[in-house]
Length: 238
Image 1 (cartoon, helix red, strand yellow):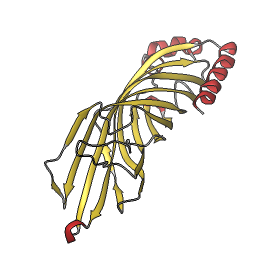
Image 2 (cartoon, helix red, strand yellow):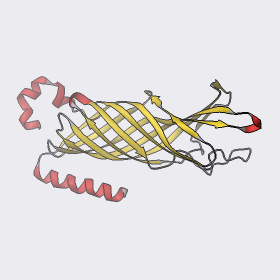
Image 3 (cartoon, one colour):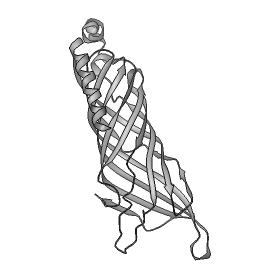
Image 4 (cartoon, one colour):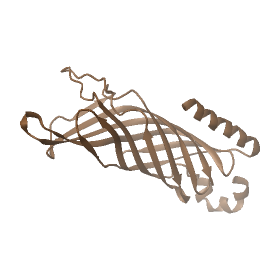
């Protein structure tokens, strides 16, 4: 699937390149993950998602290749805070308690994709991203009381070595945009075994998805904000 997707992008880029002047520029900006959930399949517990809000720290930098004023490609790098909140009931020892788990990773992502629309105004975009988790954190709350069992690890075996994800979104004039992202890879490494021999994530299948606000990720500063250039070179630039 990834190879087919990349092949389509390359072939489309070559076609547009043959017909128009190519423009290359850098862009980037922050991302606010406003609504984050997970698709959960838990064979052991009965629980539900709680919406997660992650404004920090998410930043994206892109290289843009515009083959015309209506089509372009992008690639780049990103640091992203990704996770979900899971709440379930535990009836151990004859008592029923409410357990809330907060899971998150900091990932380094490498996205690649395409843009369709007006490259100096609004556009639709989509693509693929591979992300490498490098800092894992887990917090536990029992009956809303925070426990002293926080886990914070670098390059933890509790999660896979990388994630596969896809994205689709829309960017409006002047750089504001909305993005939907889905992770095909499961959040946890179900085969992880702790020092005590337990496997805390066995049978806990979870795939994260989120909706985010993006600012300036494909914004061509020259085309947008240098008014003198826009007036004198607009026809040449786009």
